[in-house]
Image (cartoon, rainbow, N blue to C red; front, side, top):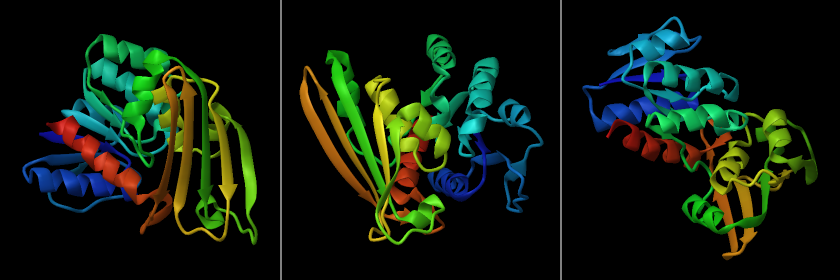
Amino acid sequence: MKLGIMGFGNIGSALAEHAKKLDDKIIINYHDKFEINKKNINKKDSIEQLFIDSDAVVEAAHPSVVKECLSLSLKYNKSILIMSTGGLLGNEKLIEEIKRKKIKLIIPSGAIAGMDAVSAAALGGIKEVTLTSTKNPKSLGLELNERKTIFSGIVEEAVKKFPKNINVAATLALASKFKDLEVEIVADPAVNTNNHEVTVEGDFGRITTKTENVPSPNNPKTSYLAILSGMRALEKLIS
């Protein structure tokens, strides 16, 4: 199998390593600004060439490339795993077309728990969804000495302002199919974990979850659980 990886940073490299553990015969193609000098890892000059030369593709770069990846998945009928879930918002028509053509599109649960229950609740009608994400200011690129709410608003605005930090909001919005999702982002120098509190209310009742994530050792903006979730999703992609 030839696995394409768009973006070979902290997440992309971890998923490539996991793929090799699953099957050491897998050939990794990648597109990134960096040169990777490893056996059976081949650089492609464009995203399109990555799709052409791969059996399935992982997007692990940035929300800004997700639309192009979805379009190429459709064009070349290639299964795809999207890690930058924030880039899926606004591209619902492409997603529906991918579903219609029965192309495998995998969205990992990321750094929050209970997305299967939220998806089920969406079938019965959801009335309110809220997300409060609390992180150390450094992981948000800030220098603060006290706890501060740095954002409060709807999910689309949160993803635009914090594209590398708030994929969980997009994942929750997609699972709940609730467009009025309210997001609050808190910077707190006293915390050393990436914390996400979710509340969902509807005809089914009420769901509350709290996930305290250890940041990835190589990138504090990314929760380690998000990488592990990507690994599990990768297994579905290549199975």
